[in-house]
Amino acid sequence: MFRLTSLNLNGIRSATTKGLEPWLAAHAPDCMCVQEVKAQQADIVGKFEVLAEMQGYFHFAEKKGYSGVGIYTRHEPSDVRIGYGSPEFDAEGRYIELRFDTPQRALSIISCYFPSGSSGELRQAAKYRFLDEMYPYLLELKQGREFILCGDVNIAHNEIDLKNWKGNRKNSGFLPEERAWMTRLLAEAGIVDVYRQLKPEATDECYTWWSNRGQAYAKNVGWRLDYHLATPALARHAHTESIYKDEKFSDHAPITIDYDFTLQGS
Image 1: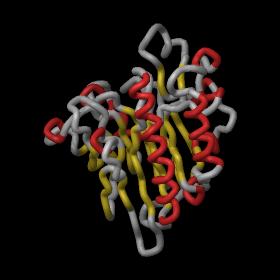
Image 2: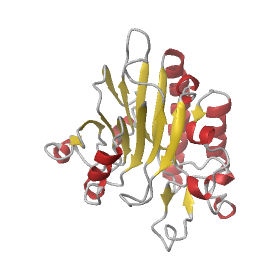
Image 3: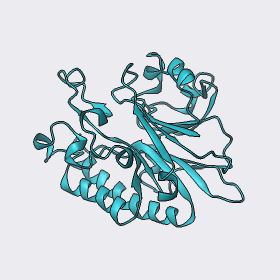
C-alpha cells in the first residue's frame, strides 16, 4: 500500500504548533505533499527538514513568508526536480517533483501550489498564465511517466465542490474559465481527479478549505480546493480516501488517499 497525504500548511511554523507532527506519526503516510510552507531554507534547517521520520524536500519562494511547497517522504527518491521551468512561477516556489523510478517504471509524486486570484485582477491574470503553462507541461509529463500531483489547485471544479456555489460564480476559484480548465485537464488530457473517482457524489464531506471569515468552519461553508490528480494507471489503484477534520492544523484539511501499489514497483 502507498499512503499519500496533501496539506496546505498555511505556514509550516504555524501548523507544527498545532499538533501536526504527532498526527503524522500516528497517521503514517508514505509521502506528504505540502503547500504554502511560507519559509526559507534558513527557517527549515534544524527544525523542519524531518517530520515524523520523513525527510523533506522543498521549493522555496524568493519572497519571504510566501508560497513554497515541499514533499516529506519515507522513501529515497531517484531524482528531485525543483520547479517546472517557468521563469515567472518558479520564483514563487510552486512545484516540486520527486521521482521514484525503477527499471520497470517511471513514477513521480508532485506537490504543487496553484496561484490564488482572490486578491484582485493582477493575481487572477497570473493564475490564468500559470494554468496556460501547467496544462501542456502536465500533458507532456504524462507521455513519459506516471504521476500523482497533489496540491492546492485553488479551483472548485463543480457545484458540488463548494457550499455556496450560487454566490461564488463570479469569484476567483469558481470562475467559468477556471472550471473549464479543470474540465479540459480531466476530459481531454486524461488526468483523473482521484477523490471524485472514489466519491463521485460527496458534497458537504468533500470540503478541504474554509474561510477564516465568520463561522465558515463551524457551519461547514467550505470549498474543495485540494486534489490528487493522477495518471489513469495510478488512479485505478486508489481505494480509500479520508479528509481529516478532527484537528485543525491550518485553514485547509489534509486529504489522504491510499493506493494499492508501492514505490518499489509492485
